[in-house]
Amino acid sequence: MTQLGIGIVGGGYMGKAHAVAMSAVGAVFETKLRPRLEMVCATSEASAEKYRTAYGFARATTDWRTLVNDPLVEAIIIASPQATHREIAEAAFKLGKPVLCEKPMGASLEDSRAMVDAADAAGAINMVAFNYIRTPASQYARQLIADGVIGDITWFRGEHTEDFLADPTEPATWRTSGVANGTMGDLAPHMLNAALALVGPIDSVIAEVETVHTKRPGGTVTNDDHAQMMCRFTNGVMGSMYFSRIATGRKMGYAYEITGTKGAIKFDQEDQNALWLYRMDAPEAQRGFTKILTGPSHPDYLPFCQGPGHGTGYQDQIIIEAKDFLEAVASGQNKWPTFRDGMAVNQIVAAAHASSDAKSWVTVTDI
Image 1: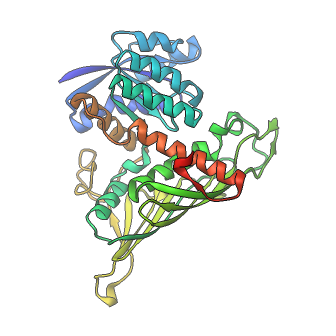
Image 2: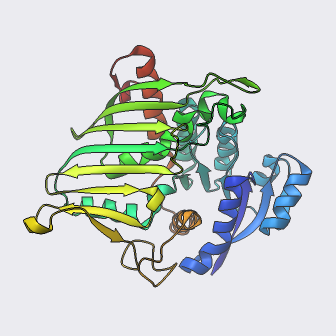
Image 3: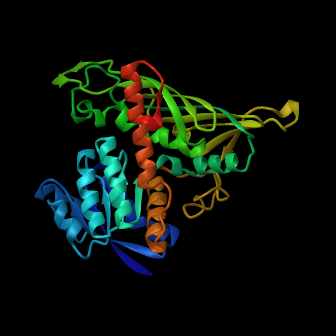
């Protein structure tokens, strides 16, 4: 076993998730590389020390440059606000250090393109953190599609819906300010990534992006609450998607339906350990969606539990992600999704905004 010094920029919600994942991944997957929590960076000395103690890092800092340049920090996880992503990634790549960056990459499409260029120029390992697509159920859905179980795909419907801002009396926060923090910047990238993974590249979109609650206690809302989008995939498949942070009653509405010529698939993240499969080759009296409970025979499930139906959780998705990142570093070969895959998502988001403004179809490659 070889140790790998990990530095995490940002110790909050996702910083903690990545720290926990890096602490557990070696035992869960018996990885060749074993992470060592070397340094965490936060905005104040008090919070940096708090995260160091709570998560088990050797050291803490308030300056991301100190973390990036430290020789004992051999791989970097960016879990700080989007506006900081580009500068940190570029600095890390100049040193040839591998980078795992939270989605969405950067605060704009321009940022993500520059990050891809920096990664390519350095030849460094790079990965963007789309965790939901890594559930055993969604990985199995990809496998079923690749194996032709549901035939040729004819239609895709996806959503990422939550209700954390459904109450119009909820105060204005950083989430209600700036395009990158709106629903199209925050929630939509996860489902767009799923659409690309399950069906393929998207050729064109027509979208409506809307702010429903323009004012909240404490300030004016400057980004979007929800959006709807129709799309045409490059392979000709027709699709539609909806994204919302005001979807009353929805807590983790990352869901999709895929229709094919031989069957169909349904999935909902609120029941993340189940996949629903319809097969046309079943006897007429038995036709209907069958609930498949994930278990040891599904991708990345067995290392967590030997019992079918016992299930995996949110943190386990991050551990799977950590395993993929470590395997990429160990092999010297990038694993999906790379920064280029993250940029493709950002390009679709930009196309959706352009479509909403123009009230017309937009070709994604024109953006």
